[in-house]
Length: 210
Ligand SMILES: *[C@@H]1O[C@H](CO)[C@@H](O)[C@H](O)[C@H]1NC(C)=O
Image (tube, rainbow, N blue to C red; front, side, top):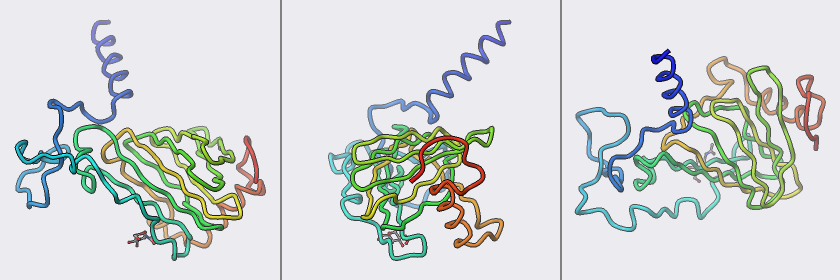
């Protein structure tokens, strides 16, 4: 019984806090030196050299380049690109979608994702472990959550570009895509996404359509 309670307690703690807790106020990622040892996370910068710039990033001020087949770009800042995030269990990304832009099905094995729409219209959804799809239309200011580890996607749903920010409860959420490893071509994946949005996809059981 005691063991069961301990296991349950650990399970609850670990489901609330995917990354281990930090043991000091801050630990900005040490810059570029080649590490000869490997730990969970990144070594801290020398504390005497830590400054306010470690906790600021301007890498999301501009849109990523969307001149690609999917007409989308996601710029993710993990603790590697944004040193101040190291040990805080957080990361952030900016998604830019052209009018027909798509971010195809993918998942983050180490974190949930909170998406906040800054401009435009975003059609977003995820699939649960019963293969049920939860999808909806999001407009400026709307927030949507993709639960940890579940496959999810976004499409532009309007007649203009769309931009959204996402926040993750891991300093390194990880990205697993479908397609590449199975040799499924991008056109097929893009069409699959569009058929979900227009309700012609056979999987749709719930939610809005464009
Ligand atoms: C996303 O944008 C960045 C910065 O503009 C660029 O380096 C990268 O190649 C783009 N990714 C894709 C898939 O186009």
